[in-house]
Figure 1 (cartoon, helix red, strand yellow):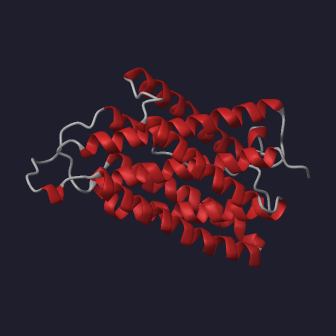
Figure 2: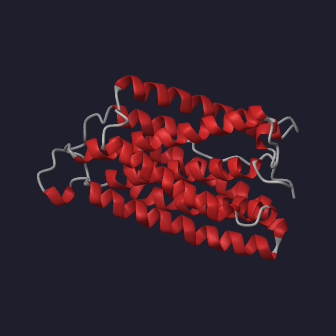
Figure 3: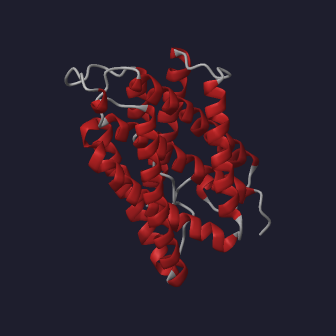
Length: 258
């Protein structure tokens, strides 16, 4: 079983961040506050999506431990399924209440498969990656709330274009993997200085995308935004957190001794 070409999937990032830059018109004027998007509602829905990711990931993890040959299939199914469903939501936000849980399920398959492979090779690595992901999330939230990081138009555009570039790198690498020519960046245990530097850059970029997610959720909740956009905001935050976790897992693995 060869996982060296497995990659994280974050196909909605560019579209999500464009939504954050400009919310655009809503479908109708909402008078009833119970039908408006709120920060608390988005947080609750993010919790639901992350719970789905964890439950499905645990199932995927256990199945791979019992039958390692299933790992590649589960990881590919999760990655491709999440990518397709994410594109649907990104271009049709109204589908988020149904689509977001579906994405969470596919993300869970992928996360569980990749986590199991890394854990079997480097015991204890998954717990470290989870802890770092939570720590980075709260650090970025603190930086955003205190104004240490200001979300200006230049900041948004820079993060969005950089994210689009990384997604293109993922996509091209995935295609090349079918011809046995994927970049060494995705090889488990490859700890060249170039790969470490690129890994650090991607981790930093994922962390900055969290700030864009926070800004989108806060600004959208202050406007006349429909309730279904809570699922859209939660979807974006979940995708970013999964992306950050996978890249942190990969980064930590580079510093392990085989």
